[in-house]
Length: 220
Image (cartoon, rainbow, N blue to C red; front, side, top):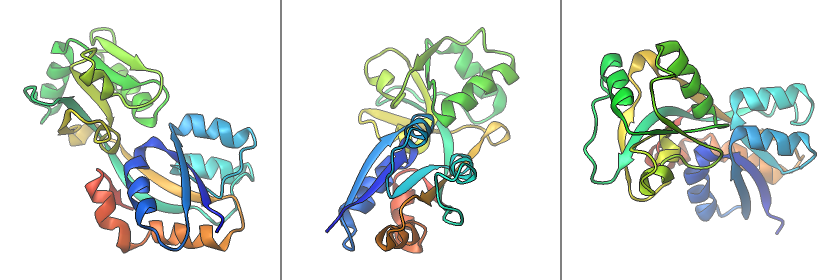
């Protein structure tokens, strides 16, 4: 049986791994990286059966005729959150003022350089007028919460689903509602494989809702 190949953003890594381990219709091989990195690979000619990226990333690749028209399928919604090292006191992020104060008092805040959450957070610091006052650790790629475990930062910002991928941390919660951003992650099909089409339908079905929620996501 030929495996279905997926290139996926990191935000749905936990969910896709769990789904793949229990999917009986076909074998699944998945590789994970931030959306920006996956866009480069796909534009460079890599041809998986399925790509899972931000909805905008999928739409852009459809417009570029890399992903097949009409195959975009929304899978999951994700929210940006804050984490601390396990056992550390959880700061107040329940209001915008409390959130700003928490950032300003932090020894260092880790965020992603090329991930959707990191790009959003860098812009948020500018909009809040505190970009120059918050001490940051910019993570080139991967999971920002790893910097909590190493002691390089005492706060990490990323999609909640990505924060949960790192052992030894605790999620404080999502950003305050007035500054929260909701990311939609979608699948798109590159091959004409019927097995890939069936898998995309499965990813968007109620059957995987519990897996999405358990890994820090919400069904689309």
